[in-house]
Image (cartoon, rainbow, N blue to C red):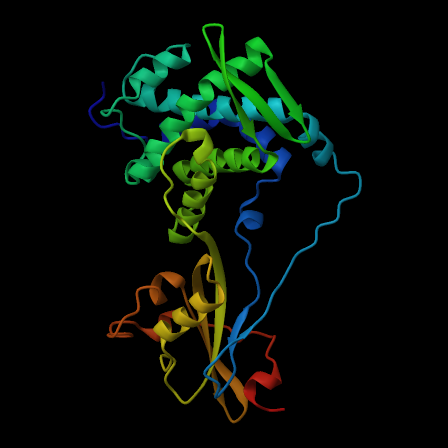
Length: 324
């Protein structure tokens, strides 16, 4: 076994070549695009000038496509989608084993047994034991379900959902229900992990929460305890300020207001500060959630506001400037 796999660029290229077809298929079926999974919305929480409590706004998006093939395919193609998602996970596991110097095998159970405690995953996973444990548990749980669909045909598929029996060595065990929503979550979770590993997407704190929440939704499949992750919600807060100090706000109070509004969600936020002089916005700053989330009583010690200066937005509402 290789002591410390490097997961070099060449190694990542081999993974990309190995998973190219399944990635293409599943991305196309679910339209898995980074901008759609993690959209950027207008500022939805606004603190008008001279007001201590915010106004909340809701935004939505409609995408009307005539003659789209996806809904029908998702309704009838759930078994193919499930098998393809398992194959994608299997190829990833096989790649990890090979990078650890473990001889490849075609038998899924043997691969699973070789995923002992000494197998090292890429850093994005290795640094998150909860993720590594659940990927391995998912792999273990999906092996017999995949076998049923491919070999025994002991399953029912309707309206994008699957009801499939666990079967091993010819013995049919309990049935497992996988809803269309769970199937999508399974696919997107596996795709996301691959994107984070190869560096196509960046795994920040907000996206990590999304992944944790998704794995909780898949708990009936992997069988591990819930991580207890509330549904993540990321927004952007806008604060109008007079004077010269772009730090003249209380990030803890903003966090409290959001927690009261979004009780059942884990809310994070970027903060846009708009400086007002003589009834006009003259400067703008955009502080990322990674900065304001760690704000404490020492805020903003050590923070250079000029690094976060940005363009004044075009959507200034005069009512938020108390101009009528």
